[in-house]
Length: 617
Image (cartoon, rainbow, N blue to C red; front, side, top):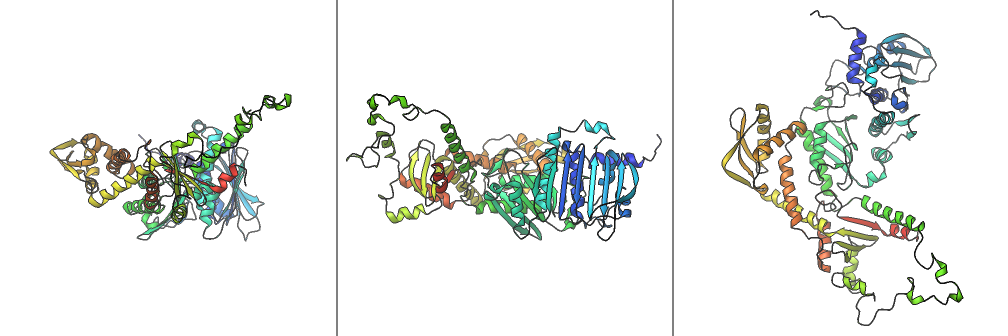
């Protein structure tokens, strides 16, 4: 078979298959160029999900006539010297523009600040047209039309216009979050126009997160600021109770570069595994700063993956910083529950306003006529509440209230006044009543709190068990006859690399020849287990996430199950002292704001919100 050299156009189209996967890939590459050019204002315009038009305008340094000619050739770049270990820019491969020009109609207009005129160059299906003068202020305008017209087969793999437009929006969001000092605008026939003004000051990143992710994320966020061996991690990550059903709301940056990396995703998952189920994900926006020589960004043409020289250091920093932030939150819970409850009340109010009520006001004819002779105020739903009889100790004279006598907390005038005032000033307030033998109602200085007694006590018991396991260790159960598990040699090597870490959780393994592992001990808390199934799951997890957290998760799952069975059950009536003690324990126990599955243990309503429901403010 004869070996021949491929044409430059075919080479560019092959490269485009890796670099330009969809319209969002074009936007990402062009945004990288605009940011690298030192722009302070960037405008993005799209049409038909980017299939018909993508236009990006910036006010960066611009390019000369000669620069334009080189820019559309492969492996020509202004951002890289001969040292791949010193990459400080977002782009560096010199493949994006020629790849785009090989599959679309590409037009670039640019002007340097000190030149009298700008220049324009065009590329259509790989054919380069000579530069020509163009009227333009300082900066660059890149226009991509008819994407993939030169490779029609690629169009069949694109999704709907709306899906492609949403993908572009996600790319722009990541650029906006990573560069708060730049003004971004996004518009087009396929979307609603959005503006993200430039921000300055030390709190610019937080303000930018509020712009993009909403104030609610900041209200329910945990500030992360950590350093280890010259590697810095900053940003905001959500409370465990503020979570989502997928990981699309996680934004991670390495030296300002947005990345989607399994190793980083695994570290975030590992940090929250003690607070969320495997199917819920936190919301986060985190920035990692590291010496460029310690990270390889030249892993994939799309530049969305990275490799760290010391991956253990980075993982440990992420997991440790996030867990420290979660622990520092104490009993804090998401404000989302309170908003949802207020929303439910308001929806009911609207529904009630539009629904005829079965009372005297909705049907005046019931009491009108004959001088209202048929109206009996004693039967009215709005009659005055009768005075309490002398043999009732509560402030309610109606018999339905008697059910609270056993469990209701003493009111402030009965309880010691100083003690009541002190407890009411505490974060979770003073217990006032128990509803449905499961929900504790408390009063605070500025509102009320509803506590799920079972979920709250479940978390308290779980944290106590965890502390005990951390102090005394997890006992291993020695097998009378070791289990020998046969696995492929590469899987055996993966397990043995993590043998020391597994032993901390009571799982002791050792090599048993080139293709087998001997299991000597298993975690006693797990009882009888299938060694082969456990090791196979561990191998799969190590292969996907680069970690062996499965044993820890299983131990935590059993501990969570045991704490569930050992906690206060729903339906149990509590004494006032028990309710108050539960509240005080929650305030002094880390992570008590959510149960073992990430659900909130309490919901708080502020007095101003309650008054708003009744039209008092």
